[in-house]
Length: 322
Image 1 (cartoon, rainbow, N blue to C red):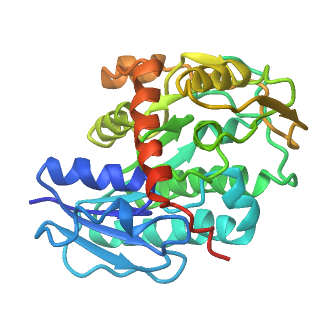
Image 2 (cartoon, rainbow, N blue to C red):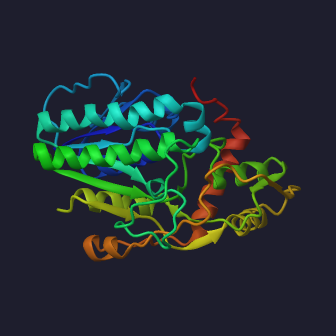
């Protein structure tokens, strides 16, 4: 039975990865300090003989007893509301956390995968964004704490690969949505759905013309798994190239909640907010035989059902840890 460590394993993506690796016959060690993750995301796994949870901050020395075959580093605040509230922690988990987990992978002779992001491209001038694009990032802007943490994590990962021979993978994740997102994590889809379900004004930033390309979580997890099992060490974009403006996305979600009394309102565009975002997935298609399968309408329906229940239950009201 392969042994896999997933840091940030109680988070949105991390918990889905735990599910996937257990289904593939792995013993999974989930490590999370719960600053933005939740035990609710992994409650269904507790008690399984193939699953173990460790409450721990990966910016400290990381030790796992016994062999490890894979290390996936997904620990990090990932939404603006989180990394703007936790700027130093975000920088530390991208730098120190990546260093500690790479050191563990080196010691265990394990394959390592870092969760990078489309934010490494910043507010892109190239469109769509290929892996060869170096990006347009403001290193001292408010978003720089996340963007530069991930850019440094990529550089450190490649240094360990080239200098120490660690078998590494880099996935650049584009906007992803689905079950287990937090209602109040500040990203567009949870915000729009939460506001529509609660009859609150739906807040669109700027004039809503800025675009994102949103990928349903099951498609993303499939792409990550295929990349980990491939022989490719350089960054790979994983995301859905189906581009949509934020205003159109807000209208789509509002139409899915016909009982809602919400109205769309407009607020100032945040500093350094990317105007366009679309992955070029040519490499993922050719290298991994991967492309997204779930249409946006279907993915949004599944996600809305999850959020309806969350609003009804009154769950997910916990704020980000300070």
